[in-house]
Length: 168
Image (cartoon, rainbow, N blue to C red):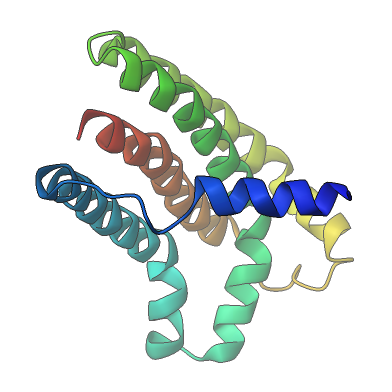
């Protein structure tokens, strides 16, 4: 017999609809699922609020410029914050008292400050290289500060998202 036959028979036996779950277990899953759903919905709104509002306040061209200039900042800040969240979630799921919040805040501020300085000094040059100078005429220090501030908020949002889910 082929490996696909064994795989299909495994899935059929493991995920058959003949299994039952009692109402109270389902109710617990539903409550946890709804909490997870609303936290993720709020997270999506926070992460995309800037992209939702800019076309209404300005225009689509401004949105394109903003997305182009902010891509590097947002990606790095979000990646670092999400990485922290991926480490926090399993630790907090095992033991909710296992995390030192003051230490977490301290190191988060240090990381944000280092990223802030890095992008203030090198962000324009890196963006210029990435986009071949296409957005250079739009880039200003004030815009960089604004974008870095929004990226820092997204940085805070990522571990906070996982923290709330683990403690919820």
